[in-house]
Length: 161
Length: 89
Length: 119
Image 1 (cartoon, rainbow over the protein chains, first blue to last red):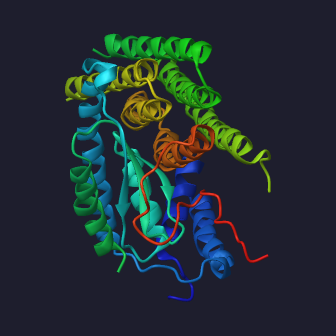
Image 2: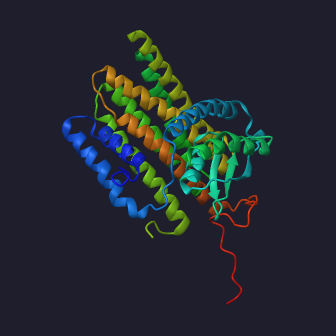
Image 3: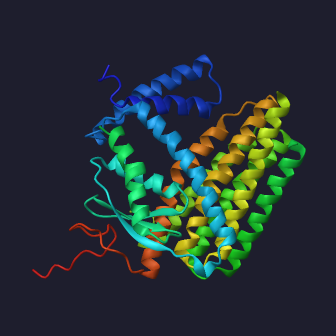
């Protein structure tokens, strides 16, 4: 089973993605989607060594959690844009030290930070141990850093085992 | 209700596009212009999809998908060109 | 039941339109280029995401089932961080802002490499 599906999650995404793209779930598309889900991960396996082990259920929970966060942060940022005078907005650069083992986890953390309005990933360090984050408005940069670490990084650590 | 909400959303995005155009005309740096074009693509995408919902056509979603892809690749290509002076390395 | 769905979709459409508008307004109002980069993130995630989901549900109600709206939403959510990252890198290249330290021995990924004096 492990040899037939080297990346189970990738296979699953390809299957669903093909069905969504084809816009119908008749037999032809099901067969084609299954073929793609088996062949593409097998063919690309040599170029993706050291794949991380992912806890799928926690990943789904994480996505829902982040979507909720995006909604809340959006309201805050909308209030800042609409009602705060432009000269009072205090933007800062902060460095977030990160301790995640996989590049995939780093990418996910960076994407999460950017998608949450108000914070934006601008740069990685060369040894993958720190992220440069731009914050739209904050009086307390350390609190933002700690929030990123406690809310997102700790959860990602439990997803990427 | 939908008869009011759809035109309202369309008006919002049309106004957003006008604001984008204004920003495009007064943008101080090259970077702002790239950013504005990126945002315009996304607003146009919303308008196309809303028009499809208004006129009950199924094809608009496909147009929107192509639009999203070309917009994203356009932004990345612009930035890459700006950073490196070439797109394909 | 249909009335409830109609109301919910109308609310989602209104919220999406307003957030798209706020995102574009933010680009006009904010003063520094880096601040302006924050505004479209908002328009993309909530604004267009809400519109796409609402349009998909409207399509289902009209009997035109089209799943591409879901695909576009996923595509936008996946690619928005990448274009923001590229724009931020381009901004660094252009404005050379003063940045904090990495906190480790390494430097930021697009810093110029340290000069090698050995040769």
